[in-house]
Amino acid sequence: MTLFILLLILAWERVFKMGDHWQLERYLSPLFARVKSHSLWGSLVITLLVALLTWKLIDISSSVAFGIPAILLSIIISLLCIGAGGLRHDYRGYLQAVRHDDFEQQNIHLTRLMMLQGMPPDTTSSNTATVSDTTKDERLREIQNALIWINFRYYLAPIFWLIVWGKFGPAILMGYGCLRAYQRWLAQHATVVQRAQSGVDGILHWLDWLPARLAGIAYALLGHGEKALPAWIASLSDFRTSQYKVVSQLAQFALSKVPHLNPVETPVAAVTLAKKATFTIVIIVALLTIYGALI
Image (cartoon, rainbow, N blue to C red):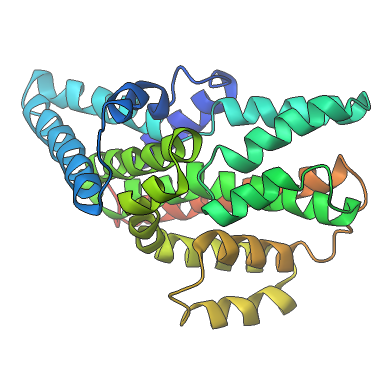
């Protein structure tokens, strides 16, 4: 069933999910706007309530109509939590702007790609401020980093939480999606102090630690492993560096054979690596399903 849900949502996302209609952030934003004070305990309570409520709904619906409502609910949750939605539209918009030499539109799409997916505050502010000021090589490297991080945060990490928790996967995935949505909302609407008070960055730092290492080994095996593997081994004992930096650094090592020169081919190379990593995970899930490790 896990494999079926994963294949279904990836196919749906690729064909239909070009906007925010199937994005969890769209529906939780009004809830976050009502939050008057930001604290670590408040963030934990919201996340746990969302996960618990989701699990109870699935548990209740599993005893109705042969469990079909529970399956449908799991599929809907996965559709809401897995996939980049409108960010894919910004990526395509950026490529189109490059082909038309529209520098203003390039900056608009890049700002969204580099800021809206919840990178650390110092990274997002730095990227946004230097979109027009960095050298061409640095600019293209930052684009690659943003695309790699989007793939990790909206595909690889959610798929990880859906898979490893078995029947609890959809509920845990919903909790993770809630935290991710809250972080994105804070990045857009709150101050740096409020974001720090919420503790969301710290929670996601630890939740992303293991998925980031698993993504890193995939990048190393699929890319330039001679540089990426030593960096990945070093990352296993690193608990302080932000997961964004870990993921982007490992991806850059894997992409080190790709020169940062062409404004179209360079981001495409990052997306190609990200797609290969996602495809590899699907193959692993299929094999685990065949051998009975997953249901």
